[in-house]
Length: 340
Length: 244
Image (tube, rainbow over all chains, first blue to last red; front, side, top):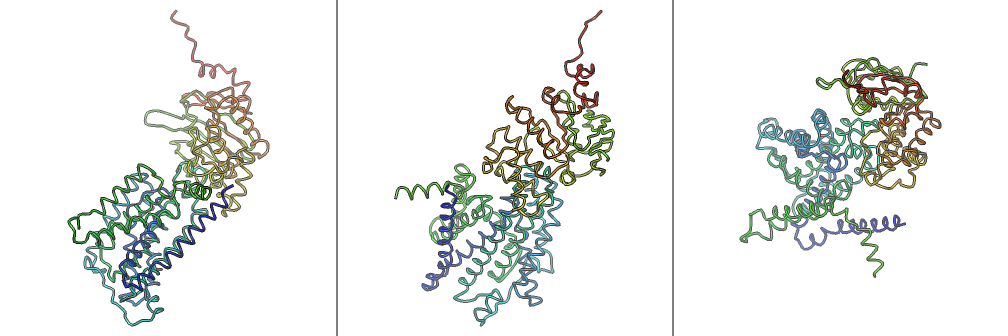
């Protein structure tokens, strides 16, 4: 009865969101206040990572606290290929994504013998192993990391091709690239969700023995789910590395690359395609805006943003553990139409 | 034609406890076999050994000519043996239809084809009106029915039902018995039905196997088995004549 009107509402919200997302950086560009373009870039990047994390965490139901390992693998591979061999960052991204998915499959297969908390702890352990490797491996310059030389004086197409935006249009360029990658990630995630994989992942999440009983190889599909997550994180890592013009262990393996996307997913709606996007739009600006507005005040640098995050997470966990998107938006929209 | 399922002296131990000792039995294609026994007789353990959830310590399990003693559950399902659980294992956060689609995807890799197959099975099992309900919010009887539909979606040749009727009201039990009969008659699927309630299994089964303390103590047509003194003893206990 309300299916078609619900879809109509969803399309209207989506269309408006797309227009807003496309138009958002333009007034900022004209007024020269590009800092908020960078905030937008970080929202989009974390949203993309959240959509990726949703595959293993939301659909397959396996808590993965170590996807930042694959963020780093992607960032490093593209940076090395660019610095040493002059490969285009986009080719580097492809290589990084494939390598991350493959490495993820190899390290995750043994982990799938573990379940629940033990699986989660094992993903953290992999991350802890990755840190000293990143800090001491001379091939990737150890803790000094890699610097990506700036290429200036390119046209728009050249900048897109080399994934290097400089000067006044830097934030603008990276914003739109992140928007494009997020759109691609959402499109692919939707295919996964609606296809055989989406059914199999959710079956494993809901009841692993039950899933095996209808012929689902739970270990194989957990590996597939985590490799998809790893691929998205690798692509995000490449983008971030070129934005930062550097890749080093403390940055690429930062715990925030998993906690922020996971928090965004949980706040927005775990297991829902658009949940991480909504969550990132709420959470990411908080820390950015706070660190600038509290700037030199008495509360500066006291981690107030973390306290706010904590409060939001506690509120969501207590009031709506399934996330903001799971609220009855359709019913509210209909009520709004009826009363007006 | 070789039998569908053969168990050769299957033994399963948990530490010092022997849950199944040298159990041998055969289920032919298009048979309904009842597997009965008092609580703790080892029925579910035997099921787990057949369907790959546990590995027999000794003995062999052969399905359709393939040795599945050490096979994984998903592989056994692929060969054509599907099961349900005593404590239901539906996919709670998925809808009734999605649950059955998960089963149908075993034989149809495209979701559209699996969905069409699943809808037909929901009609067959009488769940069509509930296709968009979340499995977690179904009644126990409907959850058990959904598990059967989901198992049938994998297109099994043998369906193993682990207490599909326990915990149901008399009306629901009658409906479930009717469903089992229709699965046998209309889909031509062989069934192995585990129950500890004799009244349910006896009229349904062509042949009954009785387990007690992990051992097979009787086998035969239902009418014969109920008169077997060992079976009566297992169910009612030995009559205590007292000293002298």
